[in-house]
Amino acid sequence: MSSTPEAGTRITLYRAPSDPHDILRAKDEIIAKLTARVAQLNADKEDIQAQIVQRDKETAILQNFIHEQAIGIRDLNSKIGRQEKQFKDLIYEQNVSHNTIDDKTHEIDGLKAQISKQERELEDQSREN
Image (cartoon, helix red, strand yellow):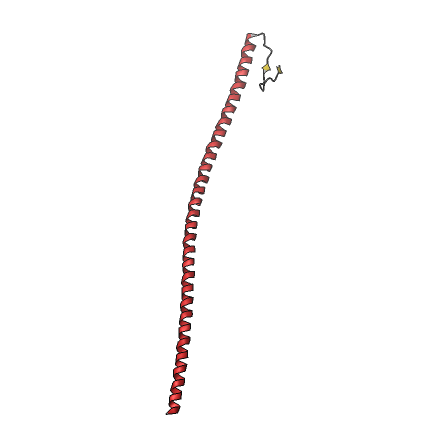
């Protein structure tokens, strides 16, 4: 029995027995070895197919998760956009309020000046009378 590898193939040569009974037994051994190898290859194939199915399921789960995350990100970006607009609106309202306060303060200062002037005029009139 010797092995000669050629082009990635392993060939095993057998010395043929002379007795027909031994020939049948050798044939049965070869068939048993080949059957065992085929059974192992089929089991390996089933394992690989199961791994592929599992990987496909995991991939689908991850794709769904990624899709959900993308939707969440889109929603958050939309919310951020609305909040930025609200913030800008509030800043604008604050500026308007400050301007209104400044205008009213200036108006009050003018009224105080008028009151002071009128009080002085009244005092002057009181002194004259």
